[in-house]
Length: 177
Image (cartoon, rainbow, N blue to C red; front, side):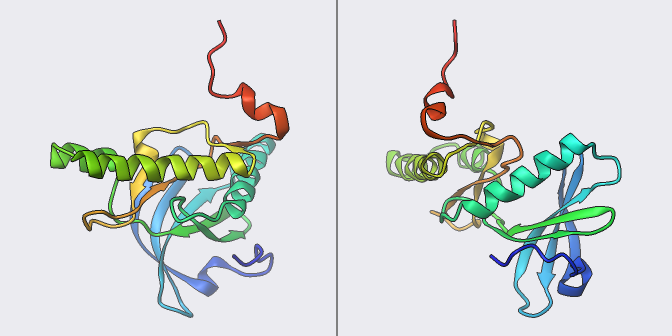
């Protein structure tokens, strides 16, 4: 991935298309890279009302996503900061949530379920090997790359993720009683 472009405007490189989803501080739209015609998903964050803490979280999310390069993790391709907006350009995944697919199919064979679980575990393992704890692992953050049967499962949404080192990894994921 190229380093964040300080002087580049998002509209110089991408055409914005339809809305794909919405969050508290952001909207996700399909976009097309002008130079290649490739499609991506742009997470567009309105930075006008963000606090300095919110900016730190946004920078952390982008830093973490840049670090994680794995076939089962939604990849960050570009990050562009403008006056009132920050754009994070990710893989466009078109298969929807894994949970929705499970409900629609009503039945997953043992082989299909095993294949999905293996991909999820590999993505989480890759995070941990890189000192990242996702902290928001849930069905809505497990996406299918496409609608095709057997499409790759991709871990998404690193907004709550944190970076840890050494022994800190051992403290996460366990309830303290």
